[in-house]
Image (cartoon, rainbow, N blue to C red; front, side, top):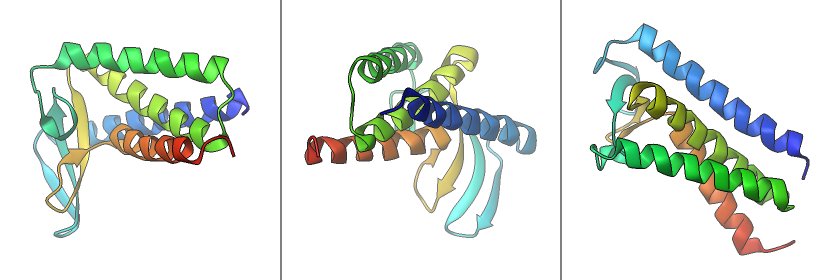
Length: 146
């Protein structure tokens, strides 16, 4: 798997995530919400010091360290092993998502979330990339070396 492919995915996720967060910060005040598809999809601005779904709100430092370790682990994995395209894509999405939230935690002490689906919690581009990446990586692990 070409390293350029992995870097392109990771850096695109990071750039889109940080761009969306910068945009929402200029567009909405903290806690403000705009319905785009009433009852289903809203834009909102939330500052989340915790993990996904707002759990462990006092864990900012732990999540900062965890994001850094995950990012370094993925860089090692992608640098020294030759994963299949599916595993590389999943890993690249995870890396981009981890870096996106790492930048927020290091710079702000919290993560900016901006999308809400129905009654589901508020999330960001990095969170979506992490979930998609974990799914693809898991699928790649289940499929083996095909």
